[in-house]
Amino acid sequence: MLNKDNDAIIYLPEVIDFVTISVEISSFLESEEAISRNEWVDRILKMLPLLYVKASLLPETFPLNDEPPATFVREEDYVRVASRIAATMGEEDIYLDVFVDDMKYSDTPVTATISEDIADIYQDVRNFVSVYQFELTGQMQDAIHVCKENFRLFWGQKLVNVLRPLHALKTSNTEGEEDDEDQNGEYLWD
Image 1: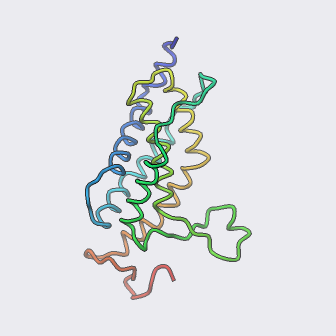
Image 2: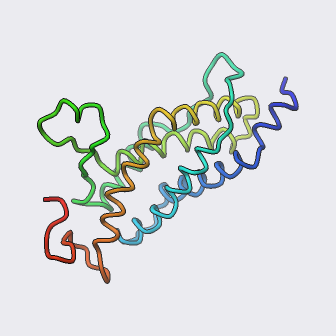
Image 3: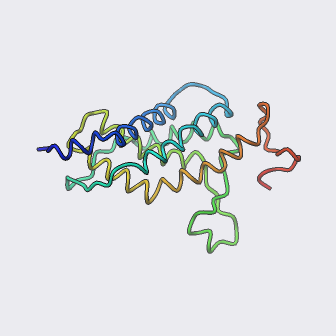
């Protein structure tokens, strides 16, 4: 049986704000709408910072149940989202990742992909949103806890890492150009 304390936590304005941006990002990433890379980058760059802020404002909670909350994102959902992003990003999908533990011990650059990093974020926030969407009230506090922990330990860093190459791509393209040259004619990734 839920109590008023649980209801107070799961419907806090900070939680509802996080649900709202999570729904927006999930819908955008699941959309079949064909848009240009420039438009896609522009839209995701407006959503990801807001997601970061709203995730950081989630309340500290503790799990109420012995079992973790239900998961809804299947492997094929994850692959579909990652594949769409990879197709949209094309050759710009890969970026150098300097904030990984392996980088300390590596003589070669460590790379990551925008598509996989954003799909990892999508998986966690979509699972969270689904608990609210299906009104699984008994799992909502646990979903907040899991999402906040995963943000802290896993996808929060991925989110800030992926902003760097997206920002570079957005600011390197002037007047709709889709090449990777900066204003001086030098390539950004050399």
